[in-house]
Amino acid sequence: MAKRVHLRLRDITPRGLYPRSVLMVVLPMILLLTAVTYIFYDSHWRHTSRKLSQTISSEIEFMVELRRRYPDQFDALRDEASRAMQLDATVIENAQIPTEQKPLLFSALDEIFSRELDVSLDKPFWFDISGYGETVEIQVQDGPDVILFMAERDRTFSTTGHIFLVWVIGASGILIALALGFLRNQVRSILKLAEAAKAYGRGRDAENYRPSGATEIRDAARAVMDMRTRLTTFAEERTTMLAGISHDLRTPLTRLKLQLAMMEDTEEIRAARDDLNQMAVMLDEYLAFASGTEGEQPAELDFTALVESVVADLGGEATIRKLDPAALIAREGLIRRAVSNLISNAQGFGSEVEIEVINGPHMIELIVDDDGPGIPEERREEAFRPFHRLDESRNQNVPGTGLGLSLARDTARQHGGDIRLENSPLGGLRVRLRLPN
Image (cartoon, rainbow, N blue to C red):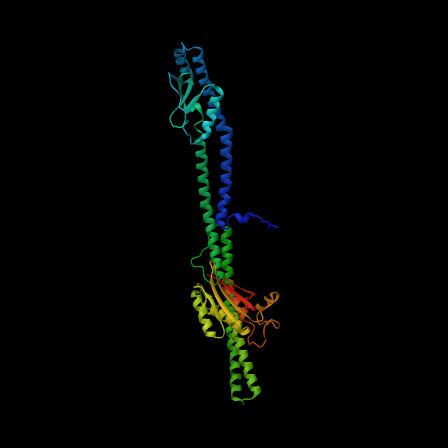
């Protein structure tokens, strides 16, 4: 059974705002111009040209009939008729009309004039209206002779139709140019706002950005800038508060560690030391998760070299399948920690780990595959919850705080990317980190 293809309008129309705006302006104008031109051509110009051609054809028919009835008096009658009808006629004895018609750029004139002559005359004829002179040449075969007629072009067919078309096309072109210029300015403001919002979403500043364009666009721009200011202020206040919490908690933890170090080395003391060390690690990871940007500014980063460095630092079983050269603008400390978390998680839950970096047209992808137990599809979103451990899916003997994937996805989204969990060809879990390049 053949698969039905549903053609949608958005599949054949441009996706960009400016091309769509241009299409909305130009397409109706072209359709209107086409309709006006067709109506003018069919109901006015063609009709007028046909009537003029009928008149000239009737006058030529009259002159030919006049020569047939009064051959001896034709010269005198011809002069009188020519002055009255403004149609010059000359008899060329023992001649033949041309056998080939001259080609015309606009064949409709040839068809109209030829049809009217054919209706009026029962003799062979030939005409030349291909030039741009003021007269039209018509030859009629009258026995062994040829009657040459010279008619004014304005009386043969309408010669002013092109002026109307020039005015219509010219005026339409001017209107389209003005509309496109206006649209370009409005769309430019929207595109600048989109770029600024994209930069804010990736944690970068939009340098020299100022709201412009229509009132609604300016209002939207100010709303985005105010929202960014509020979020930045909130993040700074949160970081300051957590820094104080860190200082307050680290002091008693340090005292406890010193006290335990001075006690007798027993099994209970060693367990207490391990608990304190685990508390310190959890505190560090929690503060890193909550503080987010850590005050680091984005900079150009060689992502491929960073991945190689992280793999070398972690050691363990990790095979690099492919590393495309890739660079991006990001906070190196956050990206390094996210990559390290993803690779160390894979090494902790699987015995075989494969790593790949793909530099796409819009996104850089880090793919980390392992042969571990994996995560069921319906529970993959739970894996991103802070301090959440999947008992059935992942080995609880692996140390950690449950913040690895949360930190990594938080970092990816701060940079305009994301993380997806998939089934791995190795049988375990595939983690796909995507970052805009």
